[in-house]
Image (cartoon, rainbow over all chains, first blue to last red; front, side, top):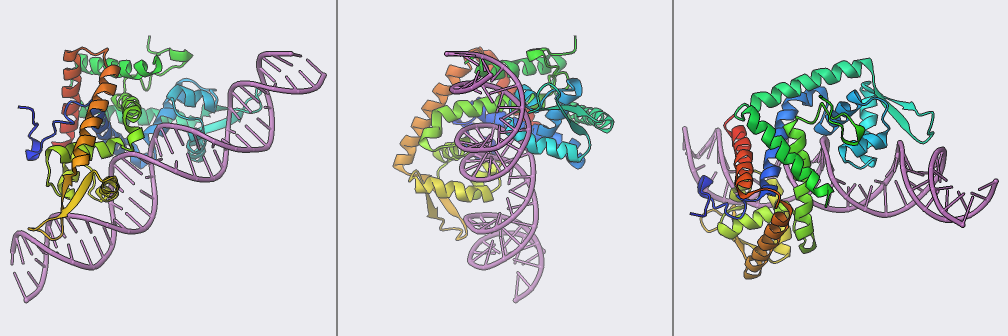
Length: 152
Length: 152
DNA sequence: ATAAATTGTTTATCGTATAAACATTATTAG
DNA sequence: CTAATAATGTTTATACGATAAACAATTTAT
């Protein structure tokens, strides 16, 4: 019985594919995130930046892009936008005149905390079918996938 | 100990976030897929179409888009491309003059089988750190995430 | 027969990844 | 110290993919 029969359609070439399932599952979480944060004008990528700068004030744009594994060129428009929202600010670095140090404004700190709360709520309302142990296992497994690539 | 100290950076607002980890892991698999198939001119999305049409010949574009949960408008350029590669063909449906029935050409069948083999090889060379049981559990968990949204 | 729904299509916008090139500034090598 | 090399922020371009609105042709429902 090799044909997954959802809607009468045979998914046998996709049903065991981690790449396919990861893509689909990620889409679901993207929706969950959007419901929580789209009205605030924040995308998952922007939230990642806020999350890093919140706990690591003073990092340069490159350091943040490195922490999030995105190209530093992608940071420019992102920081521009966050600065326009007055939640992040660029301060000229004294040691290195090429770079900026990034900080959250007071508004940005409160904003990030509220976002963090909303995302937590949205996600946990959604993945309540996972036990705490399962959720940990899933996070750990995803981490192993992410790390496996770096060591390759 | 709430600060994940990778690279000396505190990830505490991201490290327990399934959405973030899923996005990162999906990126890794996207790379694995690309290494296997980019030279063939096939993206993950195009592979999904081939995989569905391979086992379900005669479906309409809408039926395929429905099976893959993508908008039917996205099918147009995709099928155009696959038809240009001479691996898929549109045949006018006799029952419904609005729609096309999709079929793989002979070339397309062999092509899809080769792709399937290469993707399997690429993925399994990569996720060998997962036991078979773990892999099944992961697939099942991802399926539950995907399905949870539909029943919402 | 009329209204409503569906199919394929075009066009547009957005989020994100990736890569090349550039000027400015720092660092390293000779 | 000078010269080569590297790093930072930036712009521009390309690609993949999701999402949504609108439209003509056609089919289905009322």
